[in-house]
Length: 413
Image 1: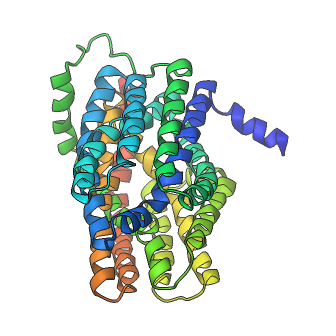
Image 2: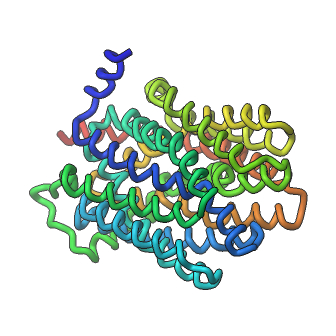
Image 3: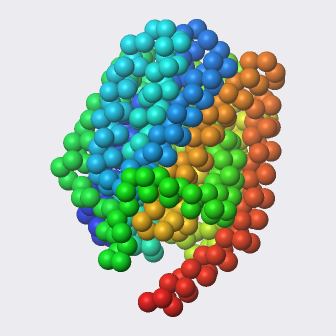
């Protein structure tokens, strides 16, 4: 067992593991806070899920603008600088949000926090790609998923304990972990931004933003992002709606949701690397279709079943889909993107998360507050089905592109 673990470590460079260590610390703080955010809003401000949806929508739309800026900044100024800057801003924003008692002011703060706090996201994704060769990227993003889910096994448990005393401690813990992560990055991580080719003039900042026009003409990539938006509208319900649904419809205590999240994370930790290696040999868009089909089944089940055991069974099915699609999705972004535009492609790929974050909780909140809450799960199941068809369609287009690009590169060498 120890020999196998050592072998896995030796597959990747040391700096990659430093980045993963920093990610682990940061994610512990995120997962102390995020799973309990909807509970905090409904409790602290005495509002329903519709208001939670509005708040998360504001946060996500501003997050989108921040990721676009962060992608251009990462390609221009470098990955390390943007990573540290984003962590410092994230720590400050968590502390500010902890002490706001007015809902309208909280809305405005969420807009600012979403804008500046998301700037580091594209830099981190680009740094993973920069540190690894192409044949290791799917596995590398799988390792990142394992690290993040190790944090999920710890974060919600400690978050629940802190929340039982005061929700303010959740925000403070998130700020502390962000600062620690920033210190690790500052001391131990190199700058990984690729050097411009000899014959290519270095971009100005304006040129970096103009580069988004090239992405706007990359229709295969934009189609991939659009289908991921549909898939993630389904996935987002796990972290935005499920906790309140379990509490209000099935009268489960809050810790039951924490147990489900911890189980989800433990499955990822145990099986993500094996899954990433297995699926790396198959057409990536078909892998995405299969994984999304597991989402369809698992999320739909919540609308039909009763009892914690059956909720756990649905979560297992969802987790199989998760460990199938997420590392492949990030590797696909790198596959689509030119080396000198990875930050911007990662920024646009952020649409696949920020758009669902903006609309999924709001739509679910309207249904839960005004109609039969079970319809949330029927609806997202149908959306997942459309996404499955979308990935199959993209397989017929994008796989041809991926087959052509290596040949073209070989011919140019």
